[in-house]
Image (tube, rainbow, N blue to C red):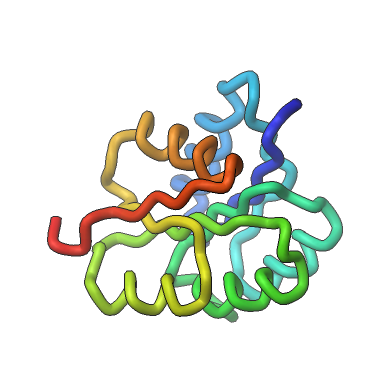
Length: 131
């Protein structure tokens, strides 16, 4: 059974690269690609992803606000936040809205793929905010 993934990233090159990399994995299926935060919840309700991979800084609605809305509207969807910097306040906000993970964008691809799988299994994966 494939893990259904929604990818929300406003940078076209990064979003398309993330989708291509995730689609290379036999057990991962990207079901939606979003470029603004206000489109996340409607797309998630339509495509029912297991994991939503969200950029923290999206136009329209930021990733953490969208994560909180997803938790309420689609509680079975787990959220992995991507950020440019693992700042302590980002981690605090992520924990407060109940996301399942937070990783930095410049981390290894294998760590991201592993995190998606772990989060789909119900685990939590958080980058060290001091790294």
